[in-house]
Image (tube, rainbow, N blue to C red; front, side, top):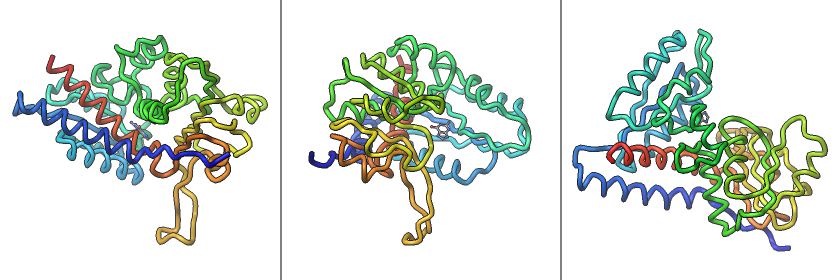
Amino acid sequence: MAEANLLLGKEVASEIRQKLKEDVAAIREENEAFKPGLAIVQIGDRSDSTVYIKSKVKAAEEIGMFARHVKLPRTSTQADVLKAVDELNKDSTIHGIIVQLPPDSEEPIDPAICTNAVAPEKDVDGLHDVNAGKLSRGELNDCIVPCTPRGCLELIKKSGTEIVGKEAVVLGRSKIVGSPMADLLKWHHATVTTCHSKTKDLPDVVRRGDIVVVGIGRADFVKGDWIKEGAVVVDCGINVIPDETKKSGRRLIGDVHFAEAKKRASWITPVPGGVGPMTVVMLMNNTVDRAKRALQ
Ligand code: GUN
């Protein structure tokens, strides 16, 4: 079999960014003073979070949105975070709010309390229990879908794969990737199996998948011979490994052994340049969607 086609999230994200830019420009033709507004709450100083937030702010501004980075100190308490989120909930210039995870605080901060403090209609990460509950029940037109699964779905559609009736295998059951991904595929009428650390005979289960989505955070974990011939493979992993041949001394790899899997898959996402850029653009898409609704 020929090698897999690449599902280039970087290119798809760029097309969606262009469309969002046009959408925002069209909104502003009628409402000159209006801009979709995104607020990102950061607790502490994790350098990886700061890098992600900067790329989100830059993407928002390029589209013509307004982005506010709300930085809280490492000494912040849970109450301080709730207060900051509540102010943003009440701010009519803000249409989307995310609390960047994980929090980096000297005080005990519960991520679920933070994400549930965001008003469900501004929860552009789709992590509020109300949005997760609606997604799990298939109320897709009345919920906000988390960005990474929404991006993965776009990529699967881009491959031209018919999802209805397919066997889909999702590795991982996190709130941010695995669980919403499984729900999304289920309500697009795939037959979905969710795998996790206690799954028995994992390679055999993964081999059932016509569509395989992986989000477990373990470098090169899924081997080539776990992949069914012709499967569509979507890798949400972003793992940093040492690489002396690089100037930075490191490089990014996914959760799937790319070189092996691409010999069996029909389509596969690379890392980097696959799912990652889709996550950022879907955050913008969710925010523009909320801004449009706020105008209705
Ligand atoms: N940390 C890593 N990825 C994400 C994300 O998509 N949203 C939030 N809020 N925090 C993250």
